[in-house]
Length: 183
Length: 342
Ligand code: SF4
Ligand code: SF4
Image: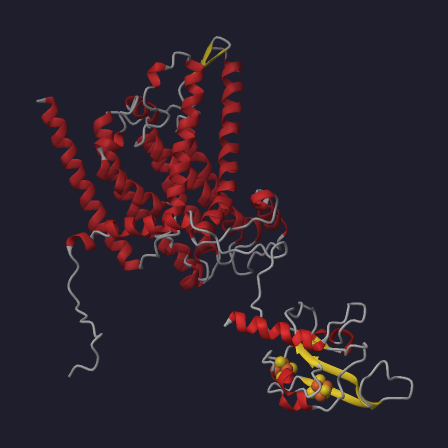
């Protein structure tokens, strides 16, 4: 019964004399390897040259600020809930009067930690967030000596203030165009 | 020639040959890694200095500073003797290789060969077969079954392939009628190289040379996958370094020997056009080293192309194919010589 038209007959012929003599095959192999001597090398000399990431690469998270520089996160916990790796923990706190420029909503996360060893960089937290507060950037978690160092707190997650704050929509827009281009 | 002068230039020559073989062996490690990289579309080590030229120094330094472990159950004397012997025999073979035509300096003729003994080829074989002891003693003294298995493999491999090697060389010796390496080289004046008369002999010889130096595809004595490193499993620090280093020196020396016996040594086409003897000597040395480097390159090229032989295949190739072939080669050569003299 013929199941597919692509079936190939395999037969176990005894080797011919030339095949048994190895030498033609050996020289053929050596020609192949010598050709590789002149091929373009795939090595990326890392610290000097960095590999180009895909525009939709998912790396270390960033907790964004809004256009006034206030943290967007309201500690709703949806990201933690959506996280398949259970990498996110947070502690909510209430905004005190006079802290409006620091936190956008009345409730904010006083502690927000992501364990980078648990995280699988799936991006579901980004999708779940109703406040567009968390985004995955294109940087990779750096190497560390202890496990504890891989638990990133707010000090390493919140978008730094000194940088000109990019409007969240612009960020989204950039991503979308990049994604479309990549496709 | 005064004795003092004789001793002086021999000492210089010995030191130079020794230093150069060490240097070349050192940089052969870098070349090997670079070449391995390039053949696999990588770059190889390039961090230590430009193009990684300090890499061998770093590797050597690292080996010196590694902890030196001598296993409790080993035979300490033999354990140390093993790598020393391997290194010693590796360095000794280069004594009979003529590096170039004679130099004329200060009114003296200076042969660029440490010792022109009339049984040079035999000497090489004698020393090379001593090399087995380094491996065997090291593997046995480690008191480790992997080392022992590696050593047993190494010694049986070396002994089997030495036979075919010697037989393939006999055809050359029949033609040259001399065992002195210098004379063999001199007979290949110009482009009258032995390889054109003995292609089969050369093929057998180079295959055996791969086996003798324990290089891929015959690196069974130290196959990492099966024997955890083979005969040097228990070795660490510079003693391991000696074993690895001896392999590279052996590679250099066997390349030199092959270049001398089959590829005309320092001879090159149109060498008679050069009247100045010293210039000829220098050019000869350069040509000889170019040939040596070519063979070292071939050694590495083969290593990064071919997979390892299985042990029974290795033995079968040695005993059932190479030895009969070299006997046939001897018969053919004998027939040809007879026809010529008729
Ligand atoms: S990227 Fe995925 S795994 Fe990582 S924190 Fe977000 S939801 Fe969890
Ligand atoms: S990052 Fe977004 S989803 Fe997570 S707690 Fe803050 S607001 Fe909620």
